[in-house]
Length: 357
Image 1 (cartoon, rainbow, N blue to C red):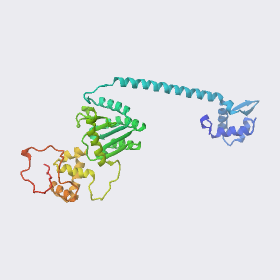
Image 2: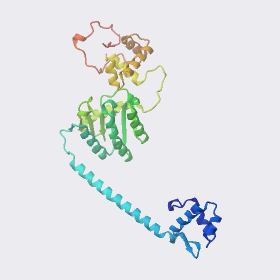
Image 3: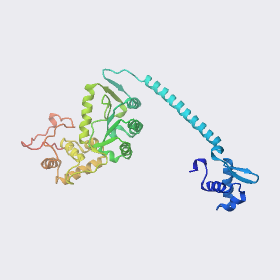
């Protein structure tokens, strides 16, 4: 109770003893309080310093606290008022700098788009759009192309939007579990009220603010190339639809795998789909954002579970089990030239599985 005044338990006990024996001598205190004399003497000095005890004719007389501590209260009040004024001055300076920053930003764009040709320019635009957002943002974040520094730079922006009651939705690759820094960022966002999910593959990184403005990469494989800011219903409709489609298939961060153990996970289904399109192990691992050894281990495990000795047989068995659609549409691999087409055609009704080279 007396800690804010700097009165420890012993000092408070000395004061209570003096209250019960007005006009007691220092010797009375040394004998009446169960503590070493040096400790009692320090407590008496503290009470004298606060004017809670007054010396009078060789005795110690307790003083009324509301009068004795009036000066201390006034000093503390003055200090608090000074701190409040200091805070107001800092806030005013921040507001002035923020206004100058906004005035300095480009205010025009070209037919609904604007190129931002450096990572610094992209981050500055994210800060501006996040600060002006009124609904929230949704992001696709393939860690391999976004980069650790970019994720670290996003943390205060996401936190600020959540503190203002806005929504923050992020979708990562399932390989985020192999990246300690990115996984820490994702879990922290969930703890602060954001929504985070994972999918096996992502086409590119993407950030959409208020469903009205988006940042997309100039080169999806090279984040250093910068980004393009796009706006307008025509541009945003497709980007928002892409995000919402991925939301339907994403798995919440750290959620347990459901279903029977012999059923493939979403990432395993994606591996089968990529294999069916003829992608090599290296191409598959790039799509998934994992290492080559990890991709090969997962492929070997799938082939063992499918009791297959070749990728062609794995594809056929996957179709038979319902793990893979018979149609290998929507390939992520460019169509081979006529010279590269297999000479033998499949029998009618056979699954269209292309054996990788």
